[in-house]
Length: 251
Image (cartoon, rainbow, N blue to C red; front, side, top):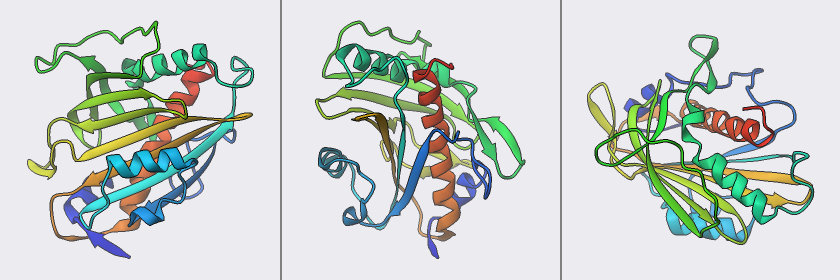
């Protein structure tokens, strides 16, 4: 199966976190993944509220790549039953700890070894780009926002706008690119057109993580869709593993 935007495909194929028979995820994390072509094909959203939030904040058009992934794992011992306000505060602080993402790893299919996903990752003052410390959140609020600079082996150095919203049904992290994403000196994604969502949901004995990439592309050339979608799935795996390790106290 083929789709559009060969240039961006070349960019994505430079970074892979999983190959057939190899995964960076431990057995304690279960996952399902799905490529989406229309809003009606959003099949992994675990609650109606999340599906409604996604449809209001993204658009699936012919120039859009949308990938969804759903992860579940047992609650750590520090979370006894229903997620409390104290637990929510801890989760929000984890999502604010952008500097701890620096150095997290993915599996490179090209090199057949683990590599760093983020060479740089930290909160910044915008537009000066001066580095700031990770915020320490002491009080629950409906929404938080900040800018971060991240440099990875796929997209290079990009400024992202982070939003963390705390709703009764879930906590959601949303990131979108502030500057255009370029490859080989050519823009492949306009600003605010690369979006990543990470939802944290209380699922009884489990915690559910729903992730989605929504990317509006520049270009009109054929590329191998499956390889591109796999690359984004694997990037999602690396970020979910970071969150999981932070939550269980491994990082």
